[in-house]
Structures are given as structure tokens and as C-alpha cells.
Length: 290
Image: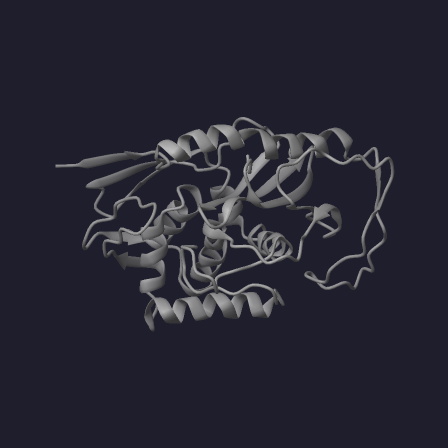
């Protein structure tokens, strides 16, 4: 008998109220950029030889207008040039929560082919898609669930599949960020569950986002408001709703990753496309990440 699961983002009563309160903030921030971008900003030149992750010079801004925000940690960068268009406390240490899963996805895609088959083990900590014992699923399926639905059990099974297990996988995640000189980030797990030693900065997260957006599979996956997945046999199907509440609401938003824990508050990494001009936004420790 075929089983079908339709899973919405899991929220308790407090989180429901919280999420309805937070919908305004990033919406305002994005619209601020959409309204003012191109009219008020003159960019400092970056040498053509600049490395992909070299911090750029600060742009020159005309008619500076401070937006009203309920977060003190935010950044907007130009995806092509890496120019910082707007930012505050970009190097302060923050807890990344489930935005961690961008690094999980990148690490998995570096280690495994998309069509590699993984035999699943149940994992129940945090938000899950309810994978059962012994399902055969592809890496493509797990990474899709990880990015769209933020499924912790998808993250666990990707990490557990590594030859030295979850601990070795997390080491590979840290090797990835060291390779790209993200010196203010350290991961202790694969799903962003709170740990005092699991931290980043919004600048580092913006650079992680730039790296993720060079991967065509990630780019297409994070645009999806809903995805339909199944195990290899087709006996168990999953209809997963994106945790990104801005998809389909703000047309310029094309992803990227959400995060929330009580300790981290709201986190959001946004991929923005304004008439072909692409930006990346990050907010953290926010009461209105959307």
C-alpha cells in the first residue's frame, strides 16, 4: 500500500504567533533595497584579480537612509562583485541555526553523486520529514528535503552515510569553510541544533550563500515553494512545503535558507533577483526575519 505524507513547517502555538509577527521585517528590508537600489548607490571599483571571497572595499552611498529594522545583524551584498550594499554588526558572532544546512548541502554534494542511494535511519531531533527505517532514497531527495523543508533527518542521513559517520562529516563541513577562509565560523553538527561552539557571522553566511549559489542544483531547489519526493520504490511519498515564507509573496526572492532556535532567534539568508541583478541578504538574531 502506498503511503503519502504532506508535511508543512512544524510550529507550536508560540512559534505560530511569533512567525506572524516576524513577517514584516525582511519584507521591508528587501523592498527598501528594491526601491533605492540603482538610484542612490555608487560602487567602489574592485580589481579584476580580486579573489572570490576577498572582502571588498566599502561602497560609497549617496542619500543614505537608515531603514527601520528590528535586528541589529544584517547584510546585503551584490552577488557578482561581493560589494556590501548595507550592513551592521556583520562580524559579530551569531548562532546560525538551520542556515547551517547550506554547508551540509554543499558538503554532501561534494562527497556524493546526486544519484547515490542511502539507506535511511530514523532521526527525531527537531524538525523532520519522518524518514523510516530502511528506506532507499537518493542523495538528490535528501538534499532537496534539507534545503526546502529543513528536514533534520535528511541532514542526519546525509551525514551518517559518510565513511567515518556524522563526526567525520562535520569535519568535512569545517574543512569546506576553512578552504574559503570563513574564519569566524565553526560547526559542531549537521543540522544547526544549538551548541555554544556552533557559530558563525552574517558576513561568513553571506559568503557561504555566494558559494551555494554557484551550484545549479541548489539554485533551482531553493526556488521551490513545494516539492514532491519519494523513496526509490515509490511506496512512500513526501509533499514538503518550503519554510521560506517569502517565496511567492515577494517576486524578487528566489531562496535561500531559513533558521530558527530559541537561542539564535530568527535567521534568514535570502537570494534576491531584481531585474537580473542578484543580491544576497542575511539577517540574524531577528524578531522579524521575514
